[in-house]
Length: 138
Image (cartoon, rainbow, N blue to C red; front, side, top):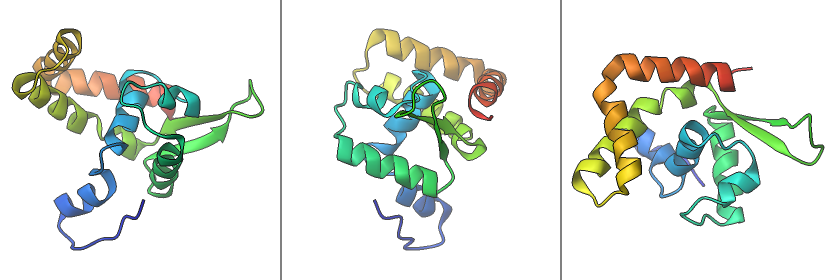
């Protein structure tokens, strides 16, 4: 996936990196589902292909959104973790989730999670970011 920059607009620059159909779902799975291994991402309901997943994970590494390290418990596995830049995407996902809950036909359970996070405001986001730092920043 190319992150060719067409302008210096911050919204454009963000969309160049995050605006495809898969990237934010990978980050969603890291944040909300606790997924950290390649095969775990492949099991998501949306059905990403292994080639697309590999490309997106590499781009996210190259752009400093996540890191990849060897899994000490399994020689052939890698662990993907969010960087501070990746954790800073939590409010973006929370806002998208709240919007989807309000304007789309979202699953009731998942919509409730999005609504609760949105209702908690900045304090809830900061608590969750702190927990993500403990889990991801090694």
